[in-house]
Length: 559
Image (cartoon, rainbow, N blue to C red; front, side):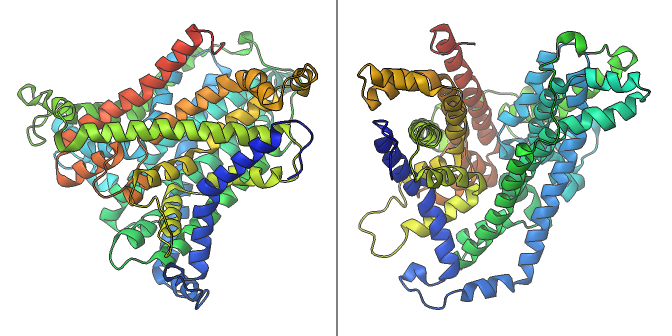
C-alpha cells in the first residue's frame, strides 16, 4: 500500500485491513471454498464442485429459493401498502401529534423480529389473547404465507415510512401546486410530479426491506416450519444443526442467499446513485404542508390502527405473557403476577448469565466495530492509498452477508484441521459473528462524517508540527465522534439481542438473551422467556437513548 504522505494513514490502513480480514474475509472465503471443495473440512481439495452439482439437483432447493423470493416480494408489497400512504400524508399534510406518531411507528423497528413473532403467536393462536377477548382465533392465517408476510411487514415498514416521509417532505407540495396551476388534477400532479421525484428514495427503501426479509430467520423458523414453508435461511440452519451435518450443502445455499442479497444491495446503490430527478428549491417550509380537512379522522384512524397493530399488539402480548402465572390461566386478575420477572433476576435457568453475556458481547462488538469502522472509513475517505478500494469492498461485503451465512462461515473457517488455536466453542466466536454482521453501521456513519470534513484542518495541524496520529486523535476523531457514538450505541442494541448467529454458533452451555428466549419458548416456559424479552427491549432501547442524552448534556454531542 502506498500512502499519500499523511502520517498515520498507513498504520490505520494496516490495522483496518487486518481486522477486516479476520472479521469479514475469513468467514466469507471459508463459505466459498467449502462450496467448491466439499472435502475441505478434512484437509482435502478432492472432487471440486461435486457437492455443487448434487445440491443444485436437489428438488427442494428450487422450492426454498422460490419461497425466499416469494416471501421477500410479499413483505415488500405489504410494507409499501402500509408505509407509503402514511409517509405521504406525514410529508404533505399537517398531521396532529406528528412527532408522537413517528415515535410509535419507530418502535416496531426496535423490537427484534423473533420477539414480535412470539408476541403474535401468543395473540392469534388457539386459546390466545384474541380468542379470550373476542371468541375466535386466527391461527390458520398466522401460520401461513399471509401471516408471515404481515408479521414481517409490521417489523420492516418503518424503513419505508421514514424514507418516504423524509423524501416526499424534501420535495414538498410546491411542485405539485405548479402542476395544478397548469391544469393538472391533484391525483395527476401527485403521480406525475411528486411520486417520480420521490421514487429513488422509495425504491431504495423497498430494496432494503427485501434484503431484510430474505435474511430473516426468526419468523420463518417460528411460523413457516409448521406449514412446511421452507426458505433458504431455515434450509441452511437444518443443514448445520440436524444430523447428518451437511456443511458443503449449507455453504452452497449460503452462496445462493449471498447472491440474492448482493444483487439487492447493488440495486439499492444503483438507485441511490441515479440523478434522473432533482429539485433545486431546497427543504420545504412548514407552510408548504396542507391541512387535512375532511381527511383528518380517516388519516388519524389509519395512523392509530397501524401503530396499534405494529407496536401495541406485540408489546402488550409480550407483557401480558410475562405477567401471567400460567398460560392456561389466561387474562384474569388472579393470574397476573411478577413472578416471571422475579425469576429472571433470581437467575432462573441462567437468565442473569444470559443478560451478562449479551451485554458483554454487545459492548465488545460496539468497541471493536467502532475502532475498525473509524479506521476503515478514514482510510477510504481521507487517504490515497492504492489498496483502499479493497478495504472499501470488505466494508461493503457484510451488507450482503446474512447472519446465517456469517455463522456458517465461522463454523467452516475455525473447524479446519491443523489449526493451533481456534475461537470455536468459545464466546469469541460470537464476538466475531456480531462484528461481521454489524460492522457496516459504524463504517457508514463514520464515512459520512469524514466526507463532511475538509482536508485543510488536518493539513493545518501537520503544518504546525502535529504527527499524523496526533492530528487524527485531536482533530479528526472528535469531529466524527458524535456520528460514531450513535452508530456504536445502535450496534450495542442490535448485538445484545441478535438471534441467528447466537443459535448456530453459541458455545455449549453459553446462553445469550436471544437463545434464552428461544429455548424457553421451545421448552414451554413461555412466561419466563417473555419476561426476558420485555426486559431486553426496555434495556436495549432506553440505555442507548439515556447515554445519548447524557452525552448531549455533557457537550460531547451537539444537537
